[in-house]
Length: 508
Image (cartoon, rainbow, N blue to C red; front, side, top):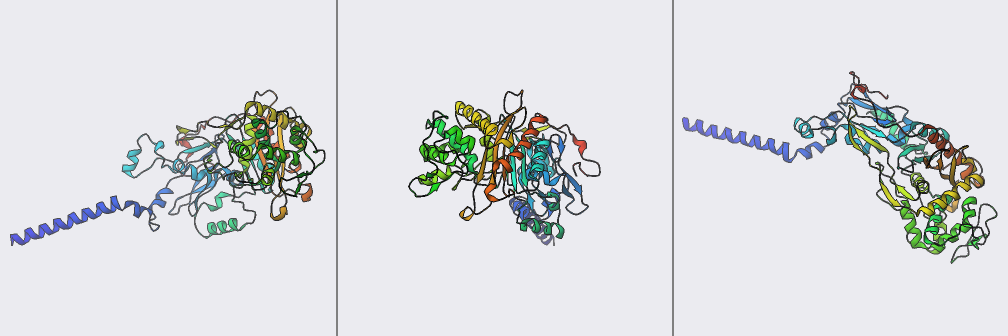
C-alpha cells in the first residue's frame, strides 16, 4: 500500500513539474507571441487605461484625454484639431497613430525608459509611469497666420528659424479634426472612410509628405550651384541667352512668362524669373555639379526626420541636357516638399549653412522634468558664405522690385522668390503657385524666419496664376507673425496637476 502511495506521489510531482514547465514556456518563450496575438486585448486595455501625455505648443497642451467609461478607457482629444493636425497627427484606438503621435509615442504612452529613474521596476511590476509630454517648436501665432491665410485652399506652409532649424509652423490645407478618429465603433469607422474618400485628401500632410514641382523657386538652387562652381562670376553680366531658348539637342523652344529676358543677367533672371537664362545656366553648370548642389540643400535625402518622417525631395542624377535645362528651373522630374523649399530659403538666410529642421524642442515627464532635448544639428554647408550673401541681395531685389512684391513687409528686410509650376498631362493642370523667402526685423542681426508656401488651387485663369498673387501674401502673413511675436517660449511650466482627479486632461 505504501508503495502505491509513493508512486502516486511521484506521479503528482511529475505533473506539477510539467505544469511549472508549461507556465515557464508560456510566460518566457511564448510571451511575445501571445502578446502580439490580435485576440489578446490586454495590451490595448493597458495602453488606454491611463491618460496619454500631451503635445504642447508654447507651454499649452493642444491634446488631451477623455474618460470614455469603456473597456479602452481613455480616448484622445484635440484642442483646435484642424489647426494643429499637421503637427500632432492622430492617436486612434482603431487606426493607430501618425506624425508626432507616432514619432513620440513611447514618451506619450509612458513606455519610454527615460520617464523613470528605475525603469526595471516597472518591467518587474508590469506597470508604467504616467505619459510624458512632447514640447514642440511651433509658435501658435505663426501657425494660425498660415492656416488663416490659406483659407481652406489646397496647399501648405512650412516656416523655419534659419539659425536653429526650429519648425515654427507646419500648415496643411484642407485639414481635419483628429478627434473624430480617437475612439472605436461605427462612428469612427464612418469618419475614417469619409476622410479617406475625400478627393481633397484632408489627412495628407502636404507640408511634409507631398512633393510638388518647385518651379522657379528652384532657381535659387541653380543660382547657388552656378556661383559656387564659378560658372557665373558676375551676377550683373549679360548671359547671351536668346528668348526663347532652344533646349539642347531638341527643336523645342523654352519661353518666358514675361518680356525682357533676352540676354539678361543672372541677377535679372532671379528678379524677374527668366526661365531661359536659368535653364541655360543649369546646363552650363552640368549634371554632376547640379546634382551635388541639390544634394547639399537636402534633395535626394531618404532619411530626413523631424522626428516624423519626411518624403524624399527629388533631383534626378541621370538626365539628358534638355532634361537638365528643365530640371534647373524646377520642372521635369524635380519634386520638393514645402519643408524642403523652406530649407532652401533658410540656407540662404543662414549664410549658407543648412540646419536640420526639428519639431520637438524637448520631451518631459508628467511633472515637467526633462527626459531629453533635441540638439541643434547642422546638415552641412549648402553653399559658400559669399554665395549666400549674393543670393540674399538678389532675393531682396526680387521682393523690392521684382516678381515678389506682395511679400514686402514695411520696416523689415524681406528676400524671396516666386514660382509657378506646371504639372499634369501636357501641363494641363492648374499651375502650382509658390513662394519661398525669409525676413529680418529692423533691429535684428539675423533673419528670424524662412518660409515656403505652395497653393495648389490658386483662383483665376490658369494663365494668370502666379506665386506673387497667390502665395506671396500668405508668406507675408506668416513672416509678419514670426517677426512680431519674437522667439518661442522656453519649456513648459505645467506639472503633474494637469491631470484632474477625474481623469480628464486639459486641452479638450
